[in-house]
Image (cartoon, rainbow over all chains, first blue to last red; front, top):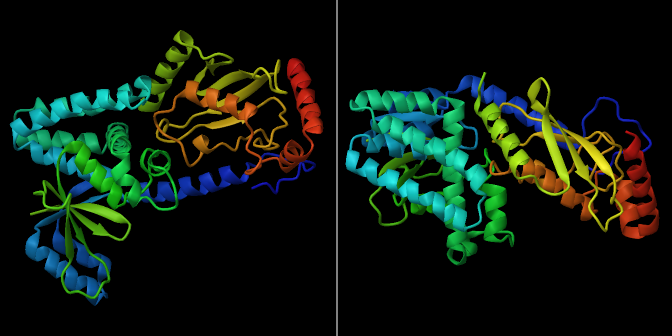
Length: 264
Length: 151
């Protein structure tokens, strides 16, 4: 930036920022053409094909398959944690209508909380309404399998799926801001919690870290087990329950940079 | 066809009409809701005062998950505006949040006119003059203001 000469006429070329954004869009297009937003259930061993010559990973997939039956892949677009988490949580609640009703109440109250923090009502409404719409649509389907199918369809429609992600990002941001004092010690680089939320939580496609997961769990009053699979030397995968000590309602597989959903 | 982006842009437009912020206005072009024309009036007590600066806003179907491309059509002399009218503003790039709407975008650009950020310059000449020779900076800006009456 800043190297553009005033005297040189710019003919039809964008500035540096736009070139970078264009390139990003190209990469995103390639990813979206190859992976569904939320995929079908697949057996754990389907992971083998990604690591055919990699004994460290093959060993760990074996360990994973001793505990889990299935994996559901999500698109690696930076939203994978939020998308996987929301999907898995709602999917699981479809088996238990009480939990789903309670969750709907929690979401109903959540909008007020955001407005109190100063989020703009006009735009928050848009995401909130879509989130509620999806919850009510799947709730109103009596047959659990049909409800799951509808959930899957909605989560693969970009319009619905992304709005679900946005709303959970806002709730996560809201929770971080409400509990600033606690979370400030997890943020590096001298940024404030509010800055962090504006740069790393609210914008779409920003990847999630530990701190996002903790806050998202707290906002939705639930727990998640993350199974870490990487090239580390241990034979088994490392499991981590967030927040510590809670019974996880959702199981996620983490490979460096990406989350997928696991099924027991 | 109604897509989430188009539905949201209709909402944005309605809000901009019902609750217009001072000193900015905007509307979709006649035949395409994805392309808007907007005007920002130069803020009072700044060298931009009295100017009427025209912009275009181009949205993609990914709006509001991604920011639109905003560009000054009127000639600008400002540290954070490129020669082609492109704007270097964090909320239009890495600090974009889906909670921003057209109204928020235009008011943010309006405050950028009042408070340039010479440390991340898109126009290095403007940034340098802003820091080192404010009088010359203001002279160049006033020329844009006058130019904006004719455009």
